[in-house]
Length: 77
Image (cartoon, rainbow, N blue to C red; front, side):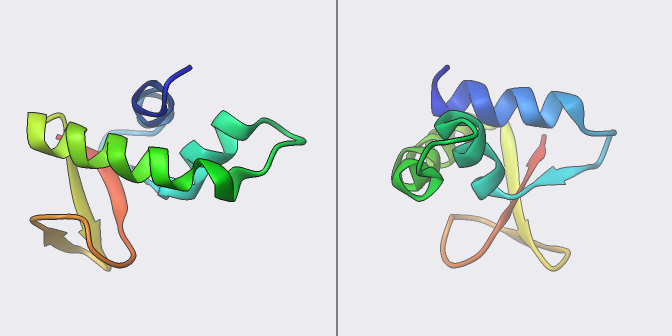
């Protein structure tokens, strides 16, 4: 599974309007015994690409973010 696939799979499991934390995608990639922190750079890169494609939206505390910087949540667009 790629980082982008992990992000999209998790979003597909959420209710409409639901969001995910990027660490959730990293945890899915790492598996139950893996080092999810080692996956975070790949998840951030995938989030950047999906945002550029218009597939996802980013926010933090209810405010839309135009680009990834600092903490963020991921939603379907």
